[in-house]
Length: 356
Figure 1 (cartoon, helix red, strand yellow):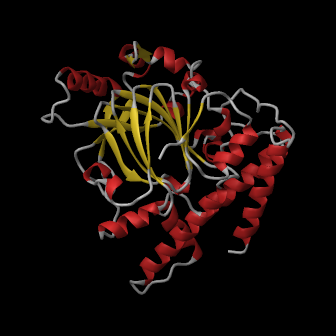
Figure 2 (cartoon, rainbow, N blue to C red):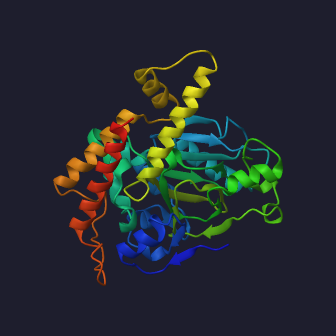
């Protein structure tokens, strides 16, 4: 199956209702990134421009995964300097990407947290700019879910769904990727058809087209941006040496998915602990959630309170200079309308949390 391609900017209202609310993937054309500085400084002749990256970040510490090894449902990582990783990338390509060398992948690099001035390298597409997750975490530079990925041809990410049930977007600065998406529920059908209890890490080992699972197969070229909906399992391969910028994020369109994910995680933890004859009090459960899930109810409550406070003060978008295009009549592109909607959704979730 194919996804919609957005060639020209559309009204935020149209995109919000058609893709965010409906939780559907799509692909933004390269016109949405053609003004990014990273497209000019990190790429040359459709190849990575290593010298510009090394001049700015050569001594930076970066996380590097080994695609040939397994660590639970992912690849094990070690810390390198960017300079050493680029040396590896050059050698790996010069030798023809041999199987005698490890296939390594620089993943989840918090470049924009550690080098805040580097946010000038890109601009969040307007459709993704109302971002509660990063709005909360970048307060005081606590953390962020903004990443850079750099991988050689053949590097890959195992089949997974994104953290917390969040949305994500991924823009290729240079290079090409292949994505396979499974709509929510298809991962259950896949396990049933294969007679297994855990999802396969690598769909290349399966003839997915022959077993009756619904899936989307996308090739993403340089400059294009993939929108990943909540709860969609996906696997990604780099078809060329590739640099991408990625955000995990959520807002009022999918905040209920985040709440549901927290509830499910808390139930799973309580059931597992009760199997050892132990019951957790509220504070212990919060500690377990933070450790094993990465977010607990206290943090989610604080995030929602932040949304209400900042919308009351008029703040709305993260890292985007653009305003929404004018609507044809329904008024969704009015900034005040967005603020009111965010406030309403956050308040309703806070009310639900107070009943917990």
